[in-house]
Amino acid sequence: MQSQTIQAREPAYTLPKPDNAQGALHPVISRVLANRNIDPHNGLQHGLKFLLAPDGFKDMGVAAARIATAIEQQQSVLIVGDYDADGATSTALAIKGLRAMGLQHVSYTVPNRFSYGYGLSLKLAKDIGASAPDLVITVDNGISSIEGVAFLNEVGVDVIVTDHHLSGEILPAAVAIVNPNQPGCEFPDKSIAGVGVMFYVLLAVNGLLKKSGQYPKAGQTPDLLSLLDLVALGTVADVVGLGRNNRILVAQGIARMRAGRLCAGIAAILKVGGREPQSLVAQDLGFVVGPRLNAAGRLEDISSGIECLLATDPLVADRLAQKLDQINRTRKEIELSMQIRALEVVKNLQIGGRKVSTGMVLFDESWHEGVVGLVASRIKEKTGLPVLVFAPDDTGEFLKGSARSISQVHIRDVLANIDARHPQMIDRFGGHAMAAGLSIRPERLDEFRAAFVEEVAKALLKHPPDNTILTDGELSAAELNQPLAETIKSLLPWGQACPEPVFEGEFEVLNSRFVGEVHLKLVLRLSGAQDPVDAICFRYLDNGDSPEKRNALKLEKIRAVYSLDVNQYRGKKSLQLIVRYLEVAKPG
Image (cartoon, rainbow, N blue to C red):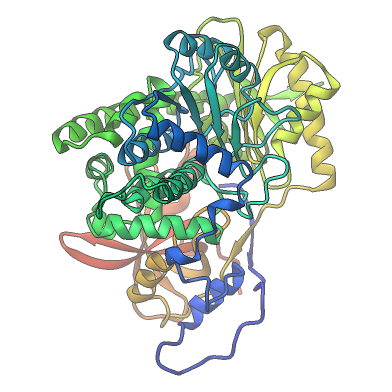
């Protein structure tokens, strides 16, 4: 763990005076909400009536009308998905929702990332054109598919783009584009995931069908709210900002899953991951279900993940979940091997005889293109700098890269600036502030690396990196308890832009040992307290760390940043601290 500064957050508004009235919020909860600028009066209300309306999307009316026509005339509709968890849930959502509204001829395709690349490419469009569907709907992709949409227009296939990624200067000539991040769209929540966009499209279509009398008998109206389990999963797994609208979608989906109203596929993946739906929290979707879906798209074909989400037979879902779990195990092995090599490269990485201290571009001939994003994330966490990792594609003609950034550097803007200054250096690129993907020719690697480092350096001059860890302050011995931990876990869906509460404090180390070779298990006592508390620091020993870090077993007093957790063992629950960062406590 690199040395960092620990600092309590500044509340976004003035904290109210303590209120001893019945039902008043716990002072710690009030502080946590203030630190995230969440109004305790309405920010905790997650009813569906508070959702933003679909009509805020540009082109929503046109898109809904065209899809409603396809349903009424029983046209053939093809969903073009993406090969990550957001794409998989978006695809499954579209299939289930359209079938529920009466469409009989709906199917899907997802481009194999190794042979087709990303989205509705020209190559994929030509294959689709040969089968001649009446309508193509992209989900979680399409905003950059200029050539693919143009070709389908030429052969008489209508295209509706639903996406959430940033648009370029030129938009595809689709029948309609539903994307909050396209120019002229006034939908307030720009952080909605692809699955959320498609959910809104289904709501709009359903509204039109109701008005047109498509459901003449009582009870025929489909229950689209039953699909919120997919919406919650895709939203959390895509690590989009959990503003109020996304929190409502996630909270509603989790509430249904906790009540047992979840699809067989999600239930099966939770089971192989050792999680119970009844005690589900948002982090389980992000760290248990999402990675297993993503692994299929990274290494093989996301179709097995989509079929798992579409499965109605629990036995089929279980079989597919087991397959996804095995793929994920393989992914972990590949990632570990790549990470070890990447850390070796980082130690010796120089440009012009000087050690790189801005942005890093890593490449190895043996690396797997489906895992470069994960490795980039790991190295970024280790170095605190933007990192871009390349691997050769299956043809050897291009290098496929994935970048992960820090808050001070908008990584897509970095790539856009490089593309403007060095035309044709980058074959194609896309992404957003914190993550991006691209492809270049192998012979341009050194030239690109120098340009990348230069652009990142310019960005860091304006906004230097900050290694400060923001916390929610200290907890007293009386506040360090299981009920508060349970309240925090169930209070909100925690995630991107709505981070899980973390606290700071000094502890005596009563006992310590390593488990699973890399995790540090601790028994701690808060300074001034009497009772000890169990704690664990996951991945304390990381690949590339020096053996000296095992001196943690000799620690006597530490300053730690931690979150509250509830450990369940043999039917019993107890408080556990998840240590996010620790350092030797300074004397005095």
